[in-house]
Image (cartoon, rainbow, N blue to C red; front, side, top):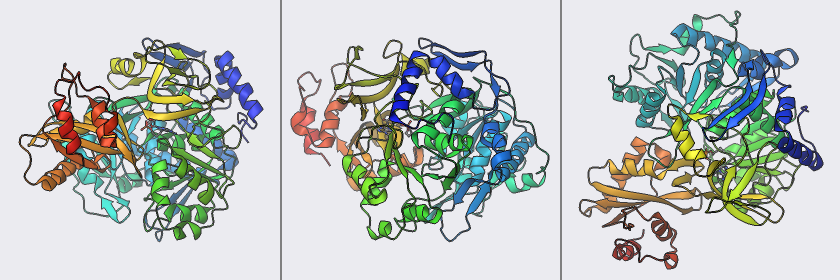
Length: 639
Ligand code: WT7
């Protein structure tokens, strides 16, 4: 039981009201339950116009003291991390809080020995191994700003991120296991570094390499060092002081896609992120000490940051970290893990649920799932069919499901039921967490009040873990999130509120796709496709996809229609894989002679979307187009 854990619906309503009436008092009381080096002078100051938001100003802390040190006395021998490897026959690892303390301390010393200092940016491009958690916490321990890059991203994506953050240090692995495959992470990093222009960025000083797959790697003298060798040089008994962090010092950068081609480095701060990730973890999942909690996300995404590492560890939880994929060795992998460790709380993505639903029922039936108490989903809207299957087949009708809506930018869960405490409804994220003030706005930017309403989802008051800036480009942060509506944070999502005030997220209203829970900007995809020598122009839209939620549909104009269309398609697909990564690969490519455009030359995506969705009788008025005749051609060539 945690002092700030809400246990009844009545209590939720009271807490929610308090968080609106007196937000400073509300958050101050919660913050009292953390370890601070120095307490705050002021709880909140804010101005969405700039934007500038400061929580717990004047406070000093180190998040890792809250994730590790403060637990050592009471639960040093409790398991902090259960690590389950890709291959079920390989040895797993159980890491206690005491062991975690030693590992993170050693890792922190290694980073210091390499020259990393407070404020330096460190890119982590690793597989899902315990060392990824150690590395993340070690950065936080010494005040370095980590930027974790998902292990499925390409060399070009790494290059862009290293450059944007001006990261002089990279931590990687020789390779990582993913199902039957292994990914040569170190050589991808080598390729990324080679592509960096020394004139623009003076360069990566050190690459620290953790051994995992034992595959051959090239080690560049002076620059590249092995983790296991560096570890020999540091003490496991002498502990270094955790760096003093100011409340608003950046904790990490995490890149995410937006409407333009260039990924944005979302910056999260130290104190606010700590308080909110922990508070939301304990309340949404109704975590109780001793529970085994399994979040299937990758640490490369915000879900892994907030709800594999920071939130759970700050709550002293046992967090299960899984290296593999849901379908290896077979599609019963998640359920076998639940059975093996008697998992109590399972947090996964609708896309995983949909793909596992389609698999052999025997894979579910063979596992004992009776330990499960709470189920969660995140990343995209969950359709009713998937929700019902999750509820009956996995939860056996006994487990509340929390459908958690949030974003990389929000740092923590914003709208969700609290498991078993507040109302839930299939396909609805349900109610805002205390401290979260959502509102719906119409096309004129006017707030739509009352129930049974629909509009664009905004948040009209700051919450502790909100985005502070986009790295190196504050104006972009203002423009993307704070300029669309006066004095409000704009989420980019459409939303409706039902007759009881429950929220349902209907999907993105901007040029961002959500493919298998991964966020990909259409501009990013188009830039990649346009790199192909034969391509003149392209336009990408999403269409409903049974498993992925949204699929990628690309309309491509070539110099001349390719003779070997299938060959050209394959080339474009592999180009996108190389430039962005396998998650972004187009599902459908249609070669077209033209794209529908407005008189000002803007591509009419609405029409392309309708065609991709197969709703060709709902194209609306096309007479204002510059070239209405291409619409028919586009319809005829639909794939
Ligand atoms: C976008 C944020 C938050 C961690 C994973 C994704 C969509 C997220 C839900 C949900 C409907 C959802 C939204 C949001 N989304 N959760 N429960 N129901 N849609 O983080 O990559 O920053 O993407 O994912 O469209 O804006 P992200």
